Length: 288
Picture 1 (tube, one colour):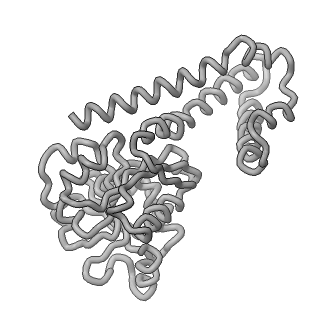
Picture 2 (cartoon, one colour; picture 1 turned 90 degrees about the vertical axis):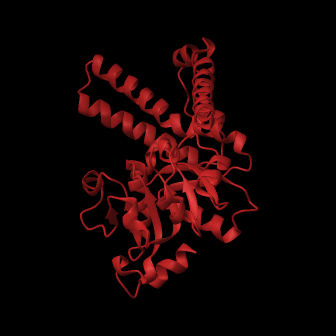
Picture 3 (cartoon, helix red, strand yellow; picture 1 turned 135 degrees about the vertical axis):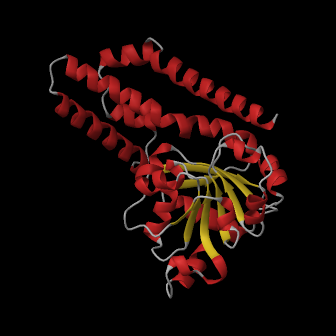
């Protein structure tokens, strides 16, 4: 899979890949897709990577100046390429109209869709292939610390192919497979909107300190490191969040405001529920 393909590239430049082979081709390229490609290129400098997107100048500005990712402005220019993984990363409308070039690229490739709301069945139907996986990366993939979730039909992707998808996404953070596609929207509500919850908390903490007279730069540094350190403890400490909360000795007044008055126990479930409903609604509209 990708590991083998990357090894093959060590003897030649990515742009001169044998018989048009590329490890990953992104059809459409959002900033998140560009981050995924950059993460894989960083781990595998000799990998053959390509992008098909009309806005090549925008993508070039996002990528590192030393990146060797091949940029193509039209799908017909990619006809000779044979991607191992086809990263479907444009807008959902890309599947609204027939695109023979895209269908041709999908044949023999592992199709990985990061377009929200598109079901496996719809992608399989439009691209005329069974080798499809859905993946939802979140915003922190931009800094290599994403939480991505994926789903595929085990009968259509081999264990080696599933490992190839997982390896690609692990280059920009952590990755987990979901067994049930019905859980996709719920997981997306947390991994997708979760960073926004944290950013909102940080914003309010910073502004409170600033309003009370602390210099803005110091307030930002204090809050950033506080949240970073707490996040590191969540990952590294075996204790539950509830136990860590007790260890942090949350002051009585703060505990009353946040919990006894039902602030967080009411707000967080409501926010996740609303996000879940939004993802579900988006999925239903795209399938109709």
